[in-house]
Image (cartoon, rainbow, N blue to C red; front, side, top):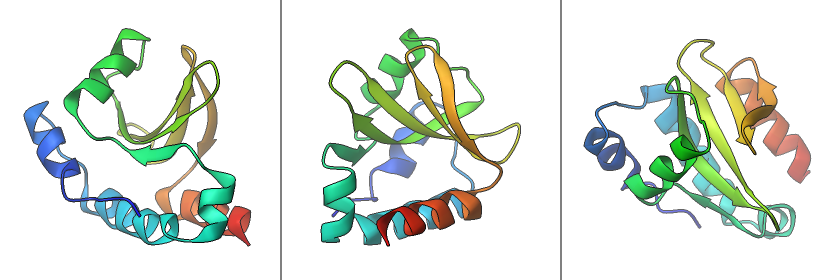
Length: 117
């Protein structure tokens, strides 16, 4: 199960805050991460654990309006699940570009729950 306690402190260290709805979504994500279905679908997933995680994404070109909260390690890259400050949605950034998006945090969580069903 994901530990959500460090995420606000990491954001503070980098000079931003996650909106309350993002933190609520991360708590829901943490609850889901404890299930067998989640571990089967996302075996290499974890929350952002340090400012270095976000710095590594910035080196790859992650735009400043994207605030990573969840990482999924792939064989050749990392998928960064991010809150988008401009659209108020969630996007996946990988290999220098956005590869998936949801119009809202609720839509992202609905997709996640459906994926695990």
